Image (tube, rainbow, N blue to C red; front, top):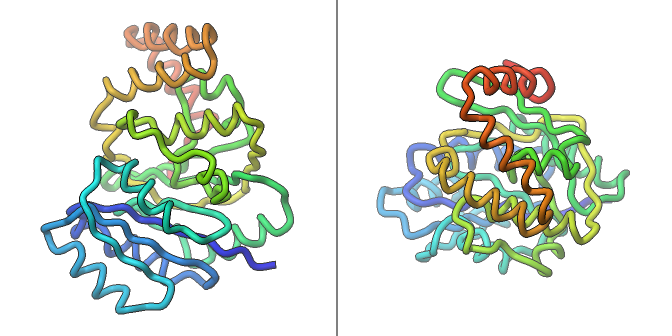
Length: 259
């Protein structure tokens, strides 16, 4: 059974990083997908590069219009999506090899889940680290610790977005809020035992730490009520440098490995 994917790349003035993103998708062995590139009105040559790389290829749709930010752009693209599962691949991020969609299709064909996810490789300059998203990462305690599965690791049924898109009142945590909504409403998660993408970690959220912490707290309070105090306690603990070092070592032991 073949599963058709919708792969979405949102971009804005990304001419320096979008080339490898597009190439990583167009080289996939599995061809039953559509590709939506949602541009925010770039002025740096991004659209010219996109058109050159895709060359009128069937199944590729390019849109350019102003938006209210990354999650608004993602919502705009979702309206056009026709695939059974949706995957977001940010400009600058890449699928790890040419067999990713093939492996995901095979996994979905033999497992029943609404949302499936795998590992990612975090890229920061020359540094590459494997971020492992195991079964624990779909648990409430994982979210209450302030952690979240990034969307470049997730394939989700399109119908889930028909029920709820991204809440654009969140500037950096709309994907986290979306996942928490799905979890609260009994959506079935499953973990795939392989790596999906290489992700640049110099993203918007990493440059807006205060907003990230504030919105994470708001999301957790919305879906977990008083239990959100666990996250607030952890934020307080983070102010102690020694404890932070211990927590980071624990995190790296379980979830991160240098490549």
